[in-house]
Length: 118
Image (cartoon, rainbow, N blue to C red; front, side, top):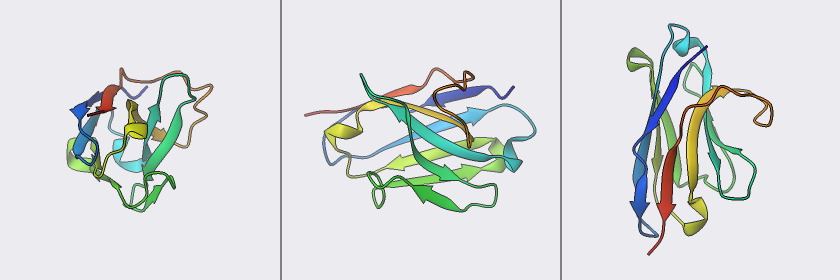
């Protein structure tokens, strides 16, 4: 199984920016589409952005225009640049392969907490 380690979260004021990173183990990283997911307190985990092995990107409507997903296959790392952050972006952010059933898939990293608050 792929092992995933997320980092880079923190506390940021509304309107601020943050970049989170995810280091993945395994030689198959470059052939997998990857996604960033988030889970806010009391809410279901949701996909916010995904990137194909070739670099095609898709975003959830709630983050489109503010978040940018990217990947570095040489480093087995995927990034999420988050700009114009809002309080409703507060959540634990996870990366993983895509597609997966977020309700049933059980191989997750520890996630990284992002808190947007003044």
